Amino acid sequence: MTEDNHLIRELRAASLGREGEVFARLPGGETVSFGALFEGAGRMAAALAECGVAPGDRVAVQVAKTIEAIQLYLGTVTAGGIFLPLNTAYTGPEVAYFIGDATPRVVVCDPGRLEETRAVSGEARVLTLDAEGHGTLRDLADRQEPVAPVARAGADLAAILYTSGTTGRSKGAMLSHANLASNSATLRDYWRFTADDVLIHALPIFHTHGLFVATNVALLSGAQVVFLPGFDADAILDAMPGATALMGVPTFYTRLLADPRLTRERAANMRLFISGSAPLLVDTHEQWEARTGHRILERYGMTETNMSTSNPYDGERRAGTVGFPLPGVEARVMLEGKEVAPGEIGVLEVRGPNVFQGYWQMPEKTAEELRPDGWFITGDLAKIDADGYVTIVGREKDLIITGGFNVYPKEIESLIDDLPGVLESAVIGVPHPDFGEGVVAVVVPEGEGTSPEAIMQALSGQLAKFKQPKRIVVADALPRNTMGKVQKKALREEHATIFTDG
Image 1 (spheres, rainbow, N blue to C red):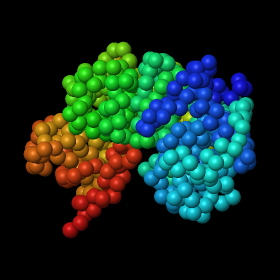
Image 2 (image 1 turned 90 degrees about the horizontal axis):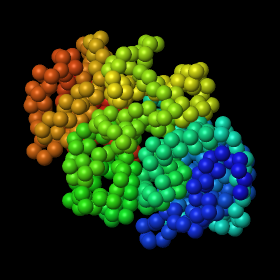
Image 3 (image 1 turned 120 degrees about the horizontal axis):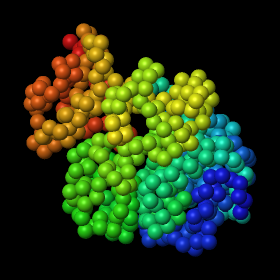
Image 4 (image 1 turned 120 degrees about the vertical axis):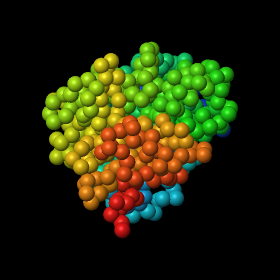
């Protein structure tokens, strides 16, 4: 094996000499060893090379979560290529944009989407991989001999991940071998992962959280994974007595709390529950600790940075915060070009070896958001308290300016979420004829629920008049993306005319 493919060398190091040991346990009872995982990756690399993939070429992938898809990720990096995972929910027109922008050499899709993918793939070679790990790519790979990793340095690109595009066109975040390897090594050490760990892996692998946190951290520590196709409460609860860690999004934890089989006894062997990708309600923290005896560890990251902050492994895991900057990562809160005082709100910026290389073919956007001295402007509104804990208040684009006053949705949401009869809420700003923007609260009731009038009355003594919602809308659920983030853009569009109709 070559020693100079930076990321593959790092991902392989912990399992050298342990090739026969189990890496993944699959739902049907089958297992995949470390040796088989990397041998399959070597075959995938050979298949991609036969399709013309050379160092620096992109490989776009929109497939179900399988071990073969993990081998395709590792195989792409092994071949010196740049891995480009695409959300399986993306439509044909969305995929057409990504392929047109990234111009991949190879596109891998589900067989059921072959024709529509071919129609937008231009000169790219289109191969298939289904939910069972079969398809034309697998057939091609099975005919190959594994190849040695192609030399790639830390600064070379390993992946391009497109942002979700909540404002304007999606941007391709360019992540280097060193970005991914260094961040995963930091998380492994900070969260105390070792070869003795068994991680329940129920996250999708088209996203940073499931691919570069869960998978990479497990490989770097030589840990085993219970590899699930997606969230499955039965499978997670069944795995828990023999596992040590779970990485999830808030929805995982709220759904598991709804299951009476979640008990302190069932979670007794677990040492760590991690949550990210969306804010976790304080109430969920408290319920989880009461039921299991474990305090969820919440962390914060972005497509452009992987993970930047985390609550501590040892020490107080403070609900409502995302902890401290990780070792080697700096964080600051800026407003109008100056760093604010502790506790004040501004835009969070981070700097460190985890920060991406810029946006693919968007130098202007890169210059807007990545400062020459390495600070990345996250676009998240945040505050850092006197103890150093970072709290995310919301997205800068979600800031509401009503009558010339700034309103931070998180402050109002926290108060509403604490009211009896409220499950959760989302606060948005929509056009208002007098104030520019009017504050609207979309509330999901719990149990018997509570009335808009009762909510307004409860808020009246706690918030300045300009912060109080001018309208409260009751909803069955909040729109979310696949990682559990509330889609405020969709809510703004839905309620855009609430103050102007009639």
